[in-house]
Image (cartoon, rainbow, N blue to C red; front, side, top):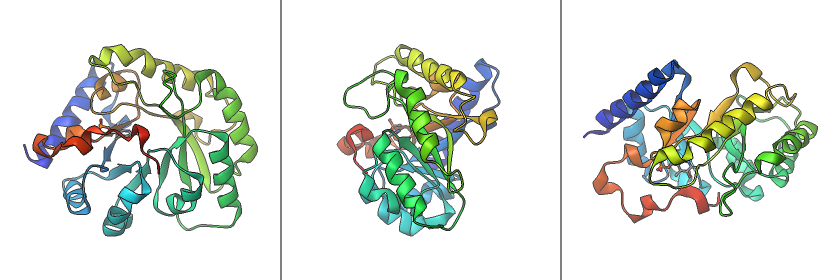
Length: 249
Ligand SMILES: *Cc1c(COP(=O)(O)O)cnc(C)c1O
C-alpha cells in the first residue's frame, strides 16, 4: 500500500467509526505521529495530504521542524521537561501533555516574559485515567484542582485551554480500554462549565492511537494520534515499537 492509500484507509475507518455512533467525521482531527520517521518521509506524508504532525520529543522533532516548518500544524504529545518549554512554544501549535502543576508554572513564566509571534498555543490537560504508574497525567480525582490551578496562572491571551488528552493502556483487544475513553469524555462533560476553557462548546478529547482509535472515536475523540498504522510494515522496526510513553521531550 502506498502512503496515500494508507491514509485513505485510516480516514475511512475513522468515518465508519463515526457512522456507527452518528458522528460527523469532520469532527475528528487526524494527528499523524511522525516520531518514527525522518524529515524526507514526513514530507511525503504532508504531500499526501496530512496537515497535522505529532512529535513526543523535541530532539527527534528538530530536523522535521526545520525542514517542514510552518507548512504543518505541529502537536507536541510527549512528556515535556520545563527547560524545553520555550522551544516547544516556538514551534508547536498544540501541547497535548499539560500533566503537572510545575509545567503550568513553566508555561506561565514563559508567557509572562512577553509576546510571541503567531496564534495562541492550544493546550490539553493530560489525564492518567487508568492510573498506570509509568504514564504521565493527573489522576481523574485531581482534575478539578488541576483546572483551578491552571485558572489561577493562565492569562488567556497567549495560551488557550482547549480540552483533555489521555493514553490508554496497551491491551490486545481495544474493547478493554473503551471504559478509559468513556471516562475521559465523562470528565469533559463534568467540567465543561469550568472557567478555564476558552471555547466550552468545543472541548477537545485527544484520545486513540493505532491500536484503539476506532473505539476512541466511538467514545467521542475529537483528535486521534496515529503513528504506526500509517507506516508500512517493513519500516515498523523495533524503534517503532518503543512507544512514546517513556519519551522525554
Ligand atoms: C507514539 C505516540 C502515539 C502514536 O502511537 P501509535 O501506536 O504509533 O499510533 C500517540 N500518542 C502519543 C503520546 C505517542 O507518544
